[in-house]
Structures are given as C-alpha cells and as structure tokens.
Image (tube, rainbow, N blue to C red; front, side, top):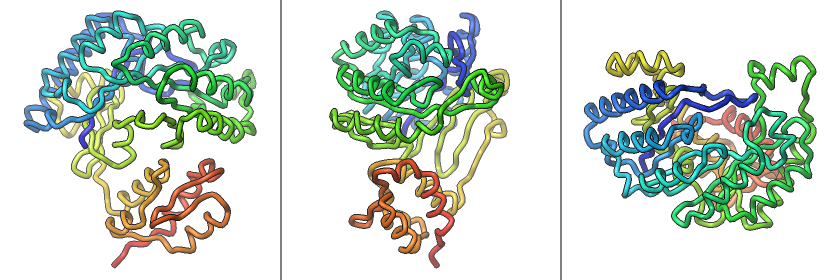
Length: 381
C-alpha cells in the first residue's frame, strides 16, 4: 500500500511542549506555502509519472492543517487532486484538526474534498492541565469540536490524549479516557508527554518552575490502557486504541514498513528502500522547491540489511500483531531462542505460532526489549 503525507507547518500558537516544525503564519505566507506545495508535487509527478495515482491513504498533518482558511484549505485539496491523487477513491483520508479551528465551514470543506477521517488534538479534558502546557483552547471548545466531528456520519474520528503532564494525576487520565471512550469516537491515541529541554516547558522544568512526576508514568499508562480496553477499545499499537475496524490504515502502513510519499517542510517519506525528508526549516524548504526540488536538497537514508532488520524488530513490536520470526528470516536475520525466553519468563512477552509479541508490563519496557533483540540479532549465511 502506498501512503501520502502532507505537512502543514502552521499553528496559531505553539504549545509549550511542542517540538514539531510549526509556526504562526499570516495569510500571505499560507498562500506562498500552497504555491510551493503545488510546485513540489508537480515536480515529483513529472519525475515519477503515475505514482501519485497509486496512493491509497492520505494524511494531512502538521502543525495544524485546520489553521488554514477555508479557501486555502480548499485550494490545498485542489493541489493534491491536481497532482493525480485519486481523492474520491482513497481507502482512507485523514486530516488533523485543533479544537479552536474546527468550525463547521472547515469541516464542510474537508468532507467535500474527500476527507473520511478526522484527528482532533484534545490532549486533556481538564482546564488546569491545558493551561500548564500552553494549550490555547479551553475544554468547552474541545468538546464542541468533538461533537461536531462525531456528528458527521461520513467521518471516522480519532481524539488525542496526553498523560504524564505537569500536575496530572492517574485519576485525571482515567477520567479523560473513560469520558472519551463514551463520546462516540472510534479511535483514541494516548501519548506520554515528551519533554524537549529547548522548549518553554522544558526550560521551566530545568529552572524548577514546573515539574513532572515520572514515577506516575507507568501507572498512568497501564490504568489508561485498562480503562480503554474495558470499554471496547483494543490497543493495536503502543499509543493507539480503536474499536474494531477503526484502526488507522495510514499509520498501520508506517508500522508495517509500507511505502509512503511526503511533501512539505520536514516531511518524511519512504520509497524503494530509501527514507528521505525535505529540509526541515521553512525558508530552506522554500529555497529547495524554488530550485526545482533537486535530489541533492533531500536528506537520504538508504537502508542496509541491518537497518531493515532493526526497523522490522522495532516497528513490529510497537503493534499488537508482534514480530514474525519468519518475516525476520526473510530479511536474512534471526535471534537466538534464549533471548525470547528471557522476556517470556519475565511475563513481558509471549510467543505463539512463530509470532513474538509484548504483553502486560512488557509494553513499558518496549525500548529495552527491542534493543536486546537487535543486539543479539544475527545475519544468516
């Protein structure tokens, strides 16, 4: 399956924890961005005729795509379709919304343009927590946005929640998860806060002006998982939960090491065994596009067999589907049985029909288990 990611690098305001490439932009800069995206996609379509016509899933992320005006948003969809992407025939088309810009007009434009799935950045349903991490929507606005999306019968809806926030309790996480599970959404993403020391929140923590209780991380995650699973949301990836049939096809393609194209500043793609991404800073990306999108302007990472095995282990263990020993062997590698036995005996994993997968508290030790497997991984001869 071939996916397509479009990065919109604009936000009305940057949250205190955010480490994505995004910034506030006036209307003229949004229009310039649309011209550049059109040029970037057109150049690619000319070099790889027919490839964009094979796209099956679309994800428009950021930043905040919904910060674009309705007219600008309509033009973005026109650019995507004009490059050859079959908007009306996609298996899935997702767009991210923030509550403060999730209005009826933007939702209507998205629906008319072929969007079938919406992802809403709620993060929390407690105002004091939103305030402490610099979110600029209030709880009521978040709930109204959610109701608007859930009320659209043509949309599948995801909502994001964060845990391990400053001042957050385990009970806060469970309350948010329980409420959201009954709200009508079919998919919930539950992410732990990652602190970037260079961002406002990280700087406040370094100065002792704010703090995060890392000892609560495990309990918040495990209790959140329990809450969602008892309400019909199965964990199919470490941070993603869905009712049956509501899984994100686009993201599953990432975790299965499928190919995907990408456009916009800092957008990452994967094609023909090569991972690539455009310049991260907007100004450099603009120069790259205006120069005709030379391949020398991309960062390229051609995967070695070892890289492929490492990715296979890491991405497989992120999901409930686990890691196929046969799949690893097809890549030319294997792991001694004693390595698997160690984690199984600890109660952190299980093996069934040649599939090794995490269970219970093993999800909390995913990085350690992945590193252990890879460090013992041997190339077959």
